[in-house]
Image 1: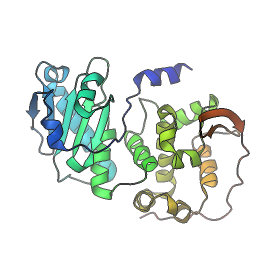
Image 2: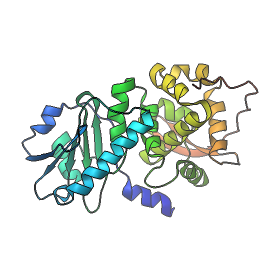
Image 3: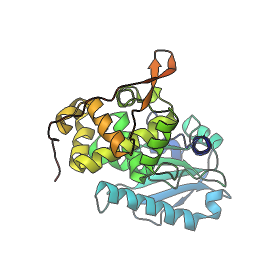
Image 4: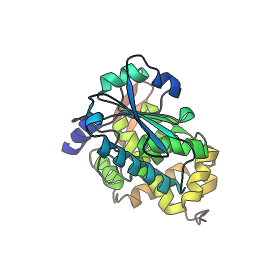
Length: 281
């Protein structure tokens, strides 16, 4: 259980809440911002004498590197809108800024991102929220599971851990949640489970069916998942878990209207003998 406890301590709590305008964040009376606009695509906002103020050269370069990584991941050479990145020292300050405690938020309508940077938390060193802003402006707003899954996959890890390794770890500790549950009720699943599992599943989709298919799923919602892959959700689940390295029949957590219940052994769905529907470029 050491790995899950480590992740619990490190978990960023990053998720997409209601959209807040750039001007509302900038004009928040609890903050007096310094602005670093050294990059043509990025402005970093921070406070005097903050952790970021003392390390601005390093912060700037690393955030630029993450933005470049996102552009590479979505296959664009440049992003034609300036990203506004607001950095605070703590989750408590974040609550003053956006109304709730979190380590990061993305407001795609304003091209604004928030993050926490301190000796204990460095949520700014991730592609996650930058991906949300860039991808939703390029491709539109998708279902939540593919949005968060792609954001996790854009880092190709979750808190430093390989995505398929985390899937195997969750399976070994009877923490798996069915793919059907993740897709239909993402927000009702523990973040420590939903984020790495959807990241792992989207990685499988990208590796197996190609980015063009993933983008069609993004743009057409979940309803076309079977049409685009040639497989049901259960069949995709079987293939995805096999690709993640599971060699045994997994145990899934059972959910009901009141939350998490017991675990139960589910039979593996029969593999689909049909040929995959490929949409690779």
